[in-house]
Amino acid sequence: MPRKNARNTKGRIISAAWKLFYEQGYEDTTVEDIVFESETSKGSFYHYFDGKDALLGTLANVFDEKYEELRTVMDPSLNAMEKLIYLNHELFAMIDGGVSMDLLARLLSTQLLARGEKHLLDRNRTYFKLLRQIISEGQKAGQLRTDKSVNEILKVYALWERALLYDWCLSNGEYSLVAYTDSVTPMFLESYRASPAEDK
Image 1 (cartoon, rainbow, N blue to C red):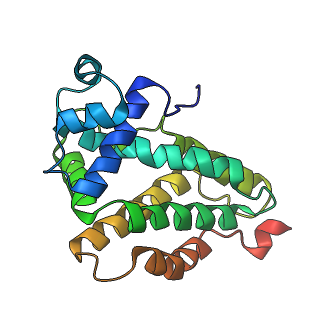
Image 2: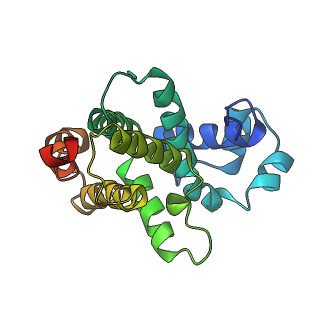
């Protein structure tokens, strides 16, 4: 799959929209603002999106762009658990510092109500592909337990991250998302470390 880059029209619209949502707030951002910021046209905007609300589901694209970037800078010498902790920290630091709680809550609520495509669960996302690769390599290297399949570990890990985000929104951000995940995610992942018996 070719890398989505911000130079394509849809990518520029999405990037501009989320920049404005963060800077001006969702309610105060208009389609005209997004078209101007993205240097596109109204025709292009409505070719890809029915309206501003349709952009809420594209936060998953913003996350995946971050994963594409992290994939290129992540230290390849890290073991599987270290890679998962690194990705979790970096994404949640981005959310903590660049995505408003209101927008994140809107995204989670739209996904709960969506009857069709649920963007966060799309297995073709960079997120799932990268995690699947790390988990698979970790099992082959004897770093992660093998009594659970790659997909089983992947599902629980993704569920864990969504639970952290949901709880942060539910708590109105009364704690630092990144500090909290840094303290609890390593403990969570310990349950997936290969046992000494599996190493032999």
